[in-house]
Amino acid sequence: MRFRLTEMFYRDKNNLVLTIFWNSLYTAFFLLPLGINLPTPFFIISIILGMINVFKSNKKFVLDNKALLLFPLYFVIIVLSLIYTDNISDGMNLIQRSLSLLFFPLIFLFVKEDASTVRKLFDFLLMGLIVSFFINFAIGAYDVFEYIKRSGGVFETSWDGVSNLMNSLIRGWSYFVRAEFSKLVNPSYVSLYILLVLSYYLKNKLVSKVQVAIISILFLYLFLLSSIAAYLILTIMCVLLIYEISDKSKKYTMSILFVLGMIVFLNNPRVFDFYTNVAGFRNTFGMNSITVEKSRLLTWNASIQLIKEAPLLGYGVGDTNDALIEKYKELNYFHNYNNKYNAHNQFLQTFLQTGVLGFSVLICIFVLLALRMNRSKNEFSVFLVLFISLFFESMLVRFNGIVFFSIIIPLLLKKRSILSSRIIRNEPALEK
Image (tube, rainbow, N blue to C red; front, top):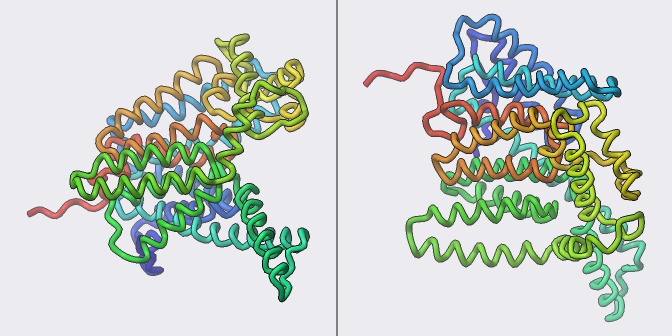
């Protein structure tokens, strides 16, 4: 976690195209947690320059990395689904957003990345997360202050005044945690970024106070984001890390800290809300008493019913959401109908869009990823972060999710992945 300004950006005096390509990616990764539209121009620049590098390069791509061609195949399948799509406009918009699934994997077939170059992607993403945390914290603190003012929690020089202030602060904290903490980007995406950064950096020992402080901020960020999916993934990651510790005394200490941490995270009010809402899932189906948890379960139920009706080809990229909305109406899921929710599960979303063929390609990508990343507990935890996140969000619908997956997963799928100590280097090794 070194952030020396002179060392941050990529420099290659002999290749200006690659220099701008990597620096555009770094800037985009820094901006990912700060806004939906901010990184888009930099991703576009990197795609253009990356393709220029492909045509300029005389190198042949490594056959061992042919798994990356599954992404262009997935893109071709969603394009072909336009043949049986009525809503061409929505379909073309999604295909336009999905162009990075075609371009970035092809680019990385011809671009060799060294360890320091790839590490900087995570460094910039980490910096963006830290900046976004303090921005969101400031916004949240202001919201709590306004809440306390509205609730009458004004300090008075008396015991009653102190008591009223303390009660307002307690209520304000509950409001702070229950409200959507991330105001800049969807909390699910921010949680994904945090978990990946933690997976990447926790493979190394913490050797400085700055590193400990940064990791603590990331854990606090996750706590305040209150993502149940993130909590589940984090639990599995911690168990894997503890299991890998060989020293029994250290393993015992870490196990105690893990249990204490679990107690803290489970005391998040949103966790209790989640249990209550899921437990009462079948009590109501209409407009009244609907919650985020219930609406998501209803969405999955409607998606599965639609898949049963058209399992072979699906409904096409343009008609999938229209079919879902009509299904919500048919099933009287009024809240989902009014909010026009997508499947909130990428595997279901892909099955709805392209049927069994597109779904099979997506599953194949993750099967190969699991096989490539079974070399260590750290790598496997990264696989879990990516795989489980797709069960809770349709990541390949929004541009930020599409472009993030089209960069990270191809880099992980390469024979020598970005987490391996055997990463391909641009410079030839010095002979001993």
